[in-house]
Image 1 (cartoon, rainbow, N blue to C red):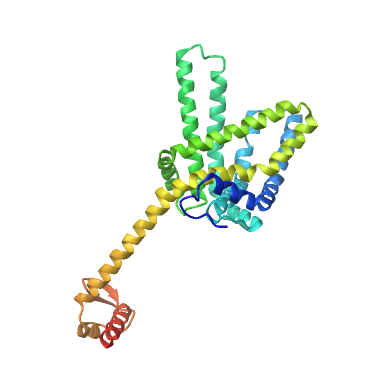
Image 2 (cartoon, rainbow, N blue to C red):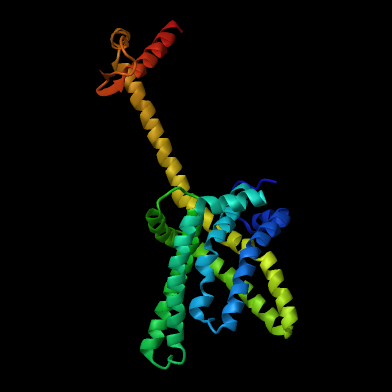
Length: 307
């Protein structure tokens, strides 16, 4: 059931689309679980070899980023089309966007690693006003990075722009969609609070493992869908609608120019210019055009004259 219109970004539209496609969403989550499980296995081996640390643990960000492309492409399909073709959409997203998502994943790894090291530096130092101010500035930057990254990931699966232009547009989209990014952050914090509470109450490693597996089956595409659902409306308003408006204005201007050109060229002049090689250039209405364009114009003028 389509929900296009003024309520297409409502809470009811979100949950309606999610539950209508729940089976397909779960299948895509299972696709993601395969590389995620492989990474967890590698980390277990790394821990056994004494190699598990912050630097290696965060490697999941660039290593799984190509699969993140499939998640966000599928999330955009859910947001825009309200439907999914699990295997087709997921693997098409990987095929079309894996390179840009990998570059983004490497940048994310560097920035998040830097933030983690910074937060470790702040620990226990809040007695100093300088440390407290630095921490506050870091938190502000973290929120900016969160919203910027959400805009960037949504743009990567939505528009065909260079990576540099997407970065510039994502900065604009952060400020244009500030409240939507804040809403996304609050939802993420709510999910994290529930997950933490459940793990604390489980008190059993087997139960915790089962809950982790359940989270892996339910959460990946849901998290991407939350981001895209809240971000795409800003992309649509600031980028897509403005582009369509500009394209319409250019098309209308071109149509007016053609009408003016036709008014400035009489039938006899067009007939004289139409004789010769269709691929040659001739001077018509103040600009150089191929003769075949003059031939088409002449035919249309004669048809209108007969009418």
